[in-house]
Length: 158
Ligand code: FES
Ligand code: FES
Image 1 (cartoon, rainbow, N blue to C red):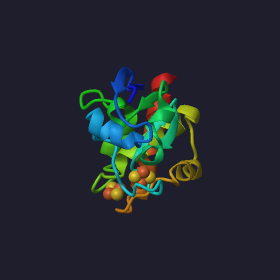
Image 2 (image 1 turned 180 degrees about the horizontal axis):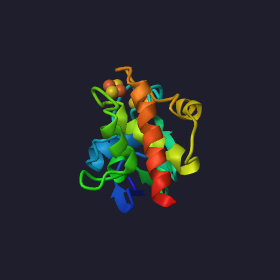
Image 3 (image 1 turned 120 degrees about the vertical axis):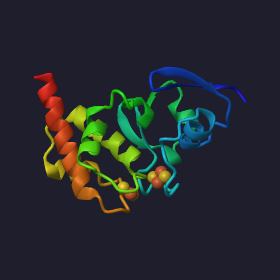
Image 4 (image 1 turned 180 degrees about the vertical axis):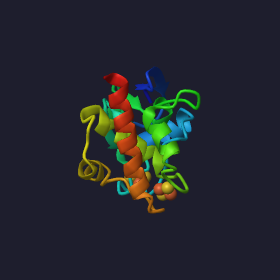
């Protein structure tokens, strides 16, 4: 089995796995990055969202061979406890979430949204997050947190 070269959170990684192995399994089991969650395993819930070349993708249904050489960003690549991404800080400030299981995927999707649209309307936020389920029903706080982060990021760059 030839090794597969990946770039994860800006760092090169080489793994030995069948090319059909889901990217989610590789992140969690080969690379020790448990922030990306297994929810449904059927590309239905968005828990497993990562950025692939800046675009949000569900990693549970994505064969690792298809992302060789691409830039993958997981929730671990967004910020750190000492230096959280503005989205992470906004989610803390708004207490946006209860169990937290969905939040990694939601933060990844929200980052992709704000990267392409720094001033989304609430409707655009809802549409962007349409593929991310939250079983705890925290949707309104989540949308408020994305709005707060967007405002903060606009302020930081003007
Ligand atoms: S675990 Fe991938 S979409 Fe649910
Ligand atoms: S906070 Fe529990 S699933 Fe979203």
